Image 1 (cartoon, rainbow, N blue to C red):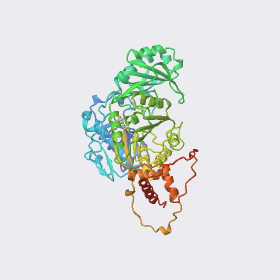
Image 2 (image 1 turned 90 degrees about the horizontal axis):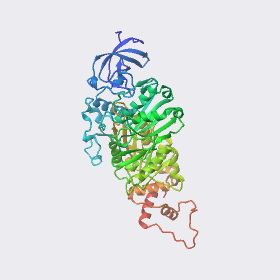
Image 3 (image 1 turned 30 degrees about the vertical axis):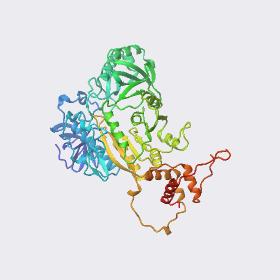
Image 4 (image 1 turned 60 degrees about the vertical axis):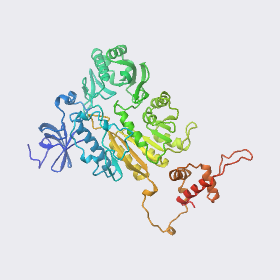
Length: 582
């Protein structure tokens, strides 16, 4: 092997792998330059062929393992399709303990690097990569609401941020209730990493058995009807309660001549109850070809109808733990929970799981069918105090607050829950949340980078602080990780005191700095009492503060307006002084 001093493309180098990328490539260092090695895993020392040379980094491909990894799974436990190039499980050769550490470190790194948060010395630093599937089903990791928030909760607090231990999945194999298979000729499987080549995957280890059974039927159909197989680009298979299966054909389903045979082949292997077709155009909606329009999925003791393109968490058993953690975070100290916003709500799973007699859930979802599912799911579960709206969240939430939608208007939320797609929250939505000023924000994310970006914006620009954060492993075998974060509204006692010469300040605009909503929030937070806009208007008038004309006065003669009580007047005056309005 050539010396590491002068490295060129095609050289063979020896490198110890100390980390892994989001794509599952090994990471090492050669002469202070990072090298990304395809086909290498954490803990190995490998010989690698250099495939690209840049000023600050190298790319390479593993040739031979010189020293095996202490974190590697036995070869007979590794999915055979990884060796064939399947890009689905980029951590599939590592034991589960090592996977969990990598995911936690990935989240911590993103929070520090992108969000600017200080997590040095947190529980992650003492986490060991050693471990195996013996962590499955560990009762201590279930995130039981009765223990969450207890002083003995795992994870240490640094810079007022508690980074909790990652919650492991109870299953690392056969856990996925949904798969989207690519189709190429008679091959039904998943794409190679950074390629359009399809790897046939009849033995995928992470899909539920019902999915693999249905896939076997489709694979036989592709072999027996090759002309029809050319009309299918991909197939989505989803499993509902009791093993019932929904299938969506993407491509040119209207031109498939042997559609009945397609159904029969699947039905011989699995209980097919719903078949949809979707043309190749991304703008097209799935069309029901046969069976029922939705699948029923259960989470704990609740049931949810789910349309083909509606979002639903793929890890059957872990989702209960994820939502238990979100509910526990929503029960933040000193925060009322009467009005809860469930944004990017999907079929309403998180919001409805938080519903109660004294709570009102308002959800917003961009997928029309999912919104219909959510409203229907409220009915199915006997929840009357929930309503879900369709549209882009960044557009619908401001409209609900300012002008209302179809007669429904809400001006304040106590808790806001967001569960956005991988791209994170639209910045306009973050700005709206900042103006609404909920007491707590619960952020559920599937991408550490966009999560860290959004948490940084909420903390640096909108007056929130990150209190707790907990990774939840929903995707064993891959680098993907779900996260639940809790942000709380900064209180006045958290700000520093600065001595100012008020003679040098222009206070003429002080009145405009406090809206009716800000006055109400101040009083609610300090006195745990609600005051009305009418109360505030009356005290404004009493103290000579200009108020706008009231166009909603009753036209009735001798109409009596209730006066503000002395107790509420005292609170409002205190708020006016706080905002320097008097």
